[in-house]
Length: 396
Image (cartoon, rainbow, N blue to C red; front, top):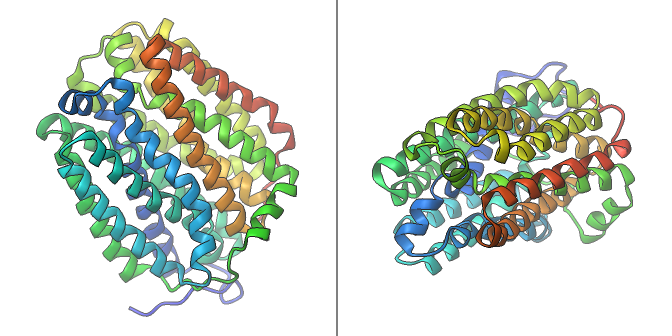
């Protein structure tokens, strides 16, 4: 199928084909986030079968996050003017292969190696996909396209991670990774068929990346991203042990609870998108307060199955609007250098995942799960320091 990128002046309203392109990118984001976060619901099973500690098993989240951070900078620099549609397809093919290796990994070392390969694809895909809303639909519809694209994050939480957790509970964690390899292959076909050609308007160069650091509003958004994501993922990586050890939730219903977490995350994404378009800083502040309070209170109010389940749902509602809010902040602060700004944003986002998960892995082995939740709360609440630098209003 032959398609080309829509030009802003060609139409006042987006066509169905344009929205189909947006939805295709959203499906790709869904696939990537599902692959990245899948171990969250499977850490106890992975640790048991491969004979490693819970903290060590948690590094299956750290490894792809760390590699993705540098891939989000390196890949846009390396690919130059390569058509972004072709790039996304290549990354999805690598993702499918890496997931298959994870499913067949004979030991922990091979599993970590395959997860590092996953990190390359996550960083490259997100760095490009995050800036595509501005190219796929006319300007006034970009905020709505952003909500749809980053709805893939929420849908991954709603369907991907819980479904993978449930599949892992029924058939074993290896089956969950194998299923994701098949999913990535399907998404690859969808991208090739439905996404329009996306030739690079301007290659990302090192000086363009460095120039972003001279933008105070963007720097504030990047700092907010680092704090919120490190705090959230540092705690969320060990959400299964928290539900098991702190709340006493039966292992068989963790997948169902994560499904509820994801449903509310999707609701939050829809609610936060228009609000972030009007005031990204204020929206980020609300998210930080609610999420920080939830994490801080979890070891106390979540010390029962009902309390833990209720706070997990609030957790999902709080974090669900974060990706679209933070990306909107970045795009608003740097509207004329969207791909370079998004690459920097993705670098920090994925580095924060890696640092948060790695630090929490050490903390959980030394001090226990409650300490991880409190550490996450402190980091998230520090976002309040940055919100005064946020852009006042997103531009259409």
